[in-house]
Length: 72
Image 1: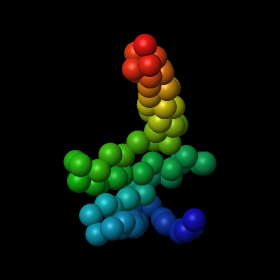
Image 2 (image 1 turned 180 degrees about the vertical axis):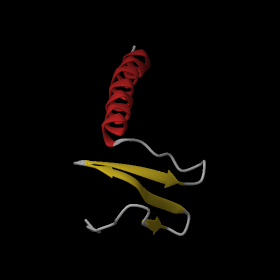
Image 3 (image 1 turned 60 degrees about the horizontal axis):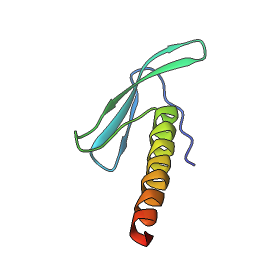
Image 4 (image 1 turned 30 degrees about the vertical axis):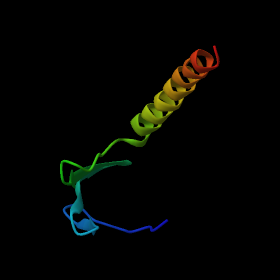
């Protein structure tokens, strides 16, 4: 993991096309702005984990039904 220190209005660039800017700092909360191409999905980690869990659950349920139907 790369750890960087940034102040308000400072930014970092990832892969030449994603820019993350520190917009505001209030106490222990930091507000970030993210500029990325539309085809690059950006999620909060807790939302990303929920999506991944939902996808795994869906594959497991659908996969088992498909396997049961295949085997008769």
